[in-house]
Length: 120
Image (tube, rainbow, N blue to C red; front, side, top):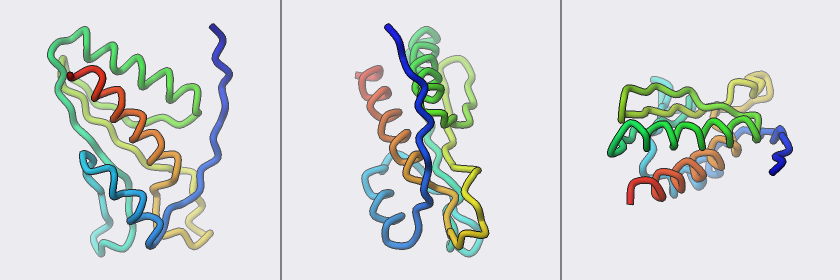
């Protein structure tokens, strides 16, 4: 099996488009700036049944991240995992009011599907 690495270009989500894209991500916590005008990213925590399942999940996330060229910040301890998604290469001079991008939303949905598969 050969997986081609494809860097997916990100575009900032702002205003109504941002709110629309956040709607289906009900299991993710939105991180806002103090004025609640800028989305700084999204986080999700999950606990798996055992250590092996935790690392199987982390392996899937790491492979997908590598293939897409977009990597979440991952905190883990035995069966607990916390993931943070945001895009750090959005140019703040472009007028974007968000550090959340379309690739973050796409990655969050993929991570949700992995969690659903591995916790049922």
